[in-house]
Amino acid sequence: MAAAWELVGCSVEIMHIRRDGDLTPAYRIFSNGTRTLLPHRTRGTVYFDEWNRPDLVVVRGWFPSWAKLFDVVARDCWKYLDELGLTPYDGEPVGDDGQLAAQRR
Image (cartoon, rainbow, N blue to C red; front, side, top):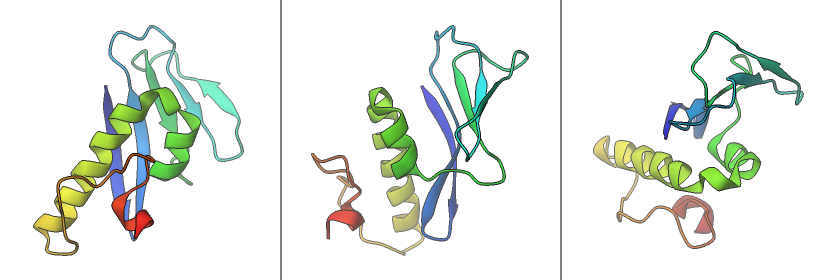
């Protein structure tokens, strides 16, 4: 499993997610909910609207079975912010409720 993400302001925007071994044809989800197949892209990959990318919390809600991947993305983001000295990092940014630590405070 893999994800491409970008920190934009205070939002972790998701560019695409991929599950290795998944034979589902690649597709893009647009902000209005429509989908389009991407037959020449890697199978098992979901791309998001490049003009209005969803944030991590939204994508987590759309794909609950990918929760472990989103936990890793959240940890990587918080670790990156900590390395920049922008936020305290306790190594456990995601709680039992699946929310980022900053959202629980």
